[in-house]
Length: 103
Image 1 (tube, rainbow, N blue to C red):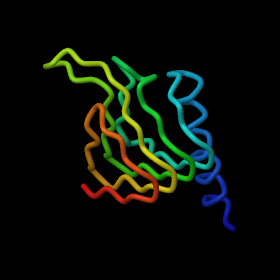
Image 2 (image 1 turned 120 degrees about the horizontal axis):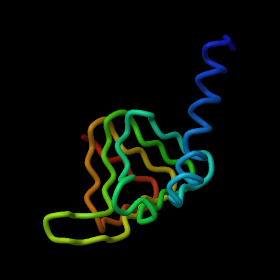
Image 3 (image 1 turned 90 degrees about the vertical axis):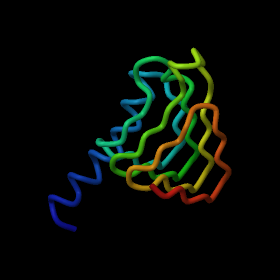
Image 4 (image 1 turned 30 degrees about the horizontal axis):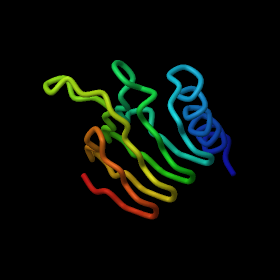
């Protein structure tokens, strides 16, 4: 395996740890989250719950609040899911296991 690929793999595996520690998000084991994914980090970051082995791809948006309706709620994504490029997961949604969400 090339140096670039090993380095990228290491960086991708560190980002979920950063989200857990810095924002208190509940993110399962072996998740892959793109640096360019938009997770709700400002209003309700502890409302995001991601299961094991889930991938969140570039430009996906995961929300846990709705400013217009003044709602702070939990958003759940199950195990073995793929949240596709530019997909939007609205606040309060519960996605089951082994789902693919397209954008």
